[in-house]
Image (tube, rainbow, N blue to C red; front, top):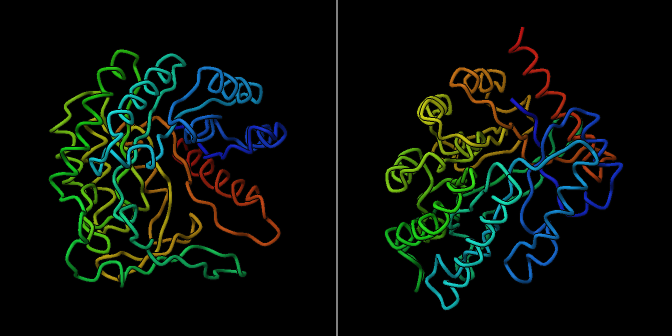
Length: 327
């Protein structure tokens, strides 16, 4: 397995920090398309912008493992608004660019209930853990309260139809260029948020996705934290999808709390959540997973405004786990 990390656009302007990532043991990076100049304005990747990113990373002996399409660039498609054909054309173009540069994994975001209308985001707050480090806590009490869908919200079946349109457009392109397409599930993983439906919140939903889009290039980003938050068995999910070769990327995130039981969850440092991340890595190894594990979100350590100390902690933790698996 490889050690991955997410980087934001400003990292490309800090070559010493890219070298720092390599020095602490990072193998590959995970980016959103917004890292490429012009994407936020047009929804399209430029060959020049991707080449620059690839070259800057290569200078630090790093490469892109996964590049993510941002959810705002498929918003009209999910809601069947004017401009959806342009969105799909842009996504097809972006998939071709991924093929051109041999980027291994294209991430696609599913519809999130919080993106509809003026729905508020779930209640996140920073709380203190050991020694005063800060981690994220999400209280879903209000977001999960039973209520009718707001006016104009898509139904679950409409979301399925529109989601499948996306993959029907881009999968033939991805297959021709050897690019894997990975769908991340809903976060938070619940069937409705403030009454707005969501359709990729549990393992059965992913099974339906893979039935509807039957392609060896169609798979998932297996977010360990999100899957545990959902109340489902993470290890059963790894077996269920890993043995079929459907796990293309892993968010190696540990949490405390499960939504169906507690109504909340906390994103903690990887060694103090409810899961043994060593056992998670062993389960991934046992199903033959060899791609990247990425610690995902950054928590706050004292004096670590740039997050580099937390990154180094998570990378060291992951490397120790992988070394233990080899023992």
